[in-house]
Structures are given as structure tokens and as C-alpha cells.
Length: 85
Image (cartoon, rainbow, N blue to C red; front, side, top):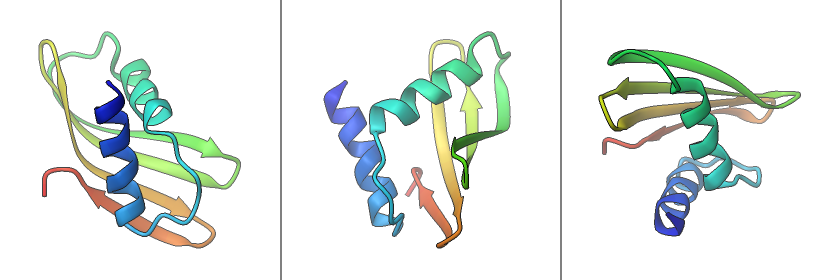
């Protein structure tokens, strides 16, 4: 799992996101939000800090999910991490 958390962190950092981020926290947030969701495509929002919103574009499947795009809106700007690229 550590490799997955590091991958998430690197994708977010490479998008120019200027703040500290935990891949484990992002992964756990996604898992909490998709718990008991039916298969399909979703746009989910999460407030990570008082002034930061993460928007997840996710496809939920039977035993897995695919995070396609993560858009992070902060006072510093908007940053997009494309996980399908």
C-alpha cells in the first residue's frame, strides 16, 4: 500500500499542488466516500482544509475504483492531477 500512497502523492505534487499532502489520507477519504456506492461514475467533493476542496472524478467497480482526475481548488489556484495519464 505504501507504493500506492507514494504514487498518489507524486501525482498531486507533479500537478503543482503547493501544500503538504498524504497519499494515505487521500486514499482513505476516497474509500470512505465510495463505501456502499453502486458501480458507476461519480464526482465527489471533499474539504481537506478550511480553504481546500478536492474534487474526485471516480469510476466505482465491484471490487475496486479508478480515480481519473483529481482537481484541487485552493487560494493559491486550481491544480489538476490526471491519474489516467
